[in-house]
Amino acid sequence: MVFASPVFLFLFFPAFLLLYRLIPAKARCYWILAASLFFYFWGEPSYLLLMGATILATWLFGVITGLLLRKGKERLAGWVAGLGVLLVLSSLLYYKYAGLLATTLKDVFGIQWRLKRILMPIGISFYTFQAMSYLWDVRRKTIPAVMNPVKLGAYIAMFPQLIAGPIVRAGDVIADLDAPRMDLEHTWHGMLRFIRGLGKKVLLANSLAAVTGDAFGLPANSMSTGLVWFSALLYALQIYFDFSGYSDMAIGMGEAMGFRLPENFNFPYLAVSVRDFWRRWHMTLSSWLRDYVYIPLGGNRKGGFRTGMNLMIVFLVCGFWHGAQWNFVLWGLWYGLWMIIERIPAVRNKVMKAIPAPVRWLFTMAIVLIGWVLFQGLPMADTWVMLGKMIGIGGPAAYTAASILTPKLLIVLAASVVCASPLARIGLRKLESLAGAGGLILRGVLGAAVLAACILMLTADTYNPFIYFRF
Image (cartoon, rainbow, N blue to C red; front, top):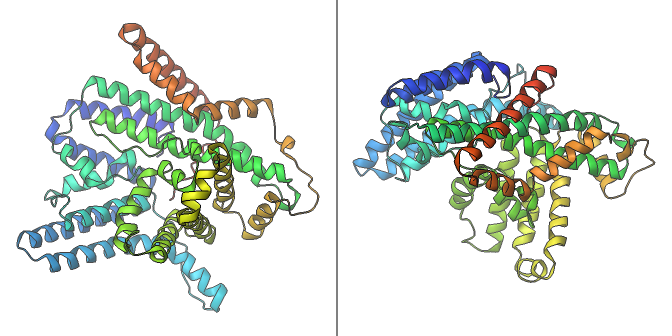
């Protein structure tokens, strides 16, 4: 079940929210867990037991770690927490990477490893990261161990952020799970945020997806340089509205339920450096990798060489997290390389300061668009051809950017550029600042119009892809 579907929009979420409001506040975490497990069962029934096992294992190791810490046995508590992290991580490694390992052993070493086709559980990358961060935070005494397994299960399995994030820390929601508060103002605001995300996903991302699918489906050697760059731009906008739309929907539902989920995007295509881009893109993943990988490795405290190695490890992990394909590894290493370059003192203190911001923005966007070509997951031979085309290497082209331009695409592209820029934020803030009944009615009418347009598009078109669905 995905958010942008009639079943979710008309049945699941309205029924959940109605009962959620009617039951006592102290019982709401039980309803969250029950509804979340049903939500997961609907889309992935065969892996519901895996989800349950992850919750129980995380709870058990967290409780033991907390008890050991209270008795002053910090070293043993560290081993127990580490064992719990490894156990949770092992499920992610098996379901997500065993197939890649088997293929690599066969291709490189000729080793035949018979392995049945493994279907990766939906959302496993998100809920395992949340479980691991919880255990680490208990060990570091950032938060106390949760003694109620239902409460912990509601945190790990909470359906708004289960399949696509944002990655939520236990400290963000655990305290509110005791008695989630819900009022009409936050429900109203949360639903408007949900509709905004739905509009991003359905009206913009889905419209762009049809074009980018056709463009990247063309023979790579028949595409012109302009077409490859233009296709990468369209894909950049598609993945942004696809993923940030789902994040907006999750944050909106969280607010309606009485939780404040963390923001995940901050206009990433305004970035003027690679470091700035990763401060704006998938911010909850970036902060997770910083706090649980980069800093434990030593961060920037052990000299320039170690800092560079730590950055490369972080982005290698980032690439692997996104998918069990070598193109994602290359994508992560591509960003790791530029992060290291930007940290070279001469580059950071002289070169970047001497270059005007518009030029730095253009250069950063070129790096990002090249990265999205790597991210696409096309056969590596086609990827290399496209990367060559981007720098002008390649033969004559049968298809140009004009080949995919249509009046509808121009309209969607213009709307996408506006919505990916601060113009959208300025408009929203002015709209939200309108006081009185008039402002309330206007916001409601615009929200209803966007919702109606989304429903019409969903019922008229079955093409509803989601890039991050199995990350």
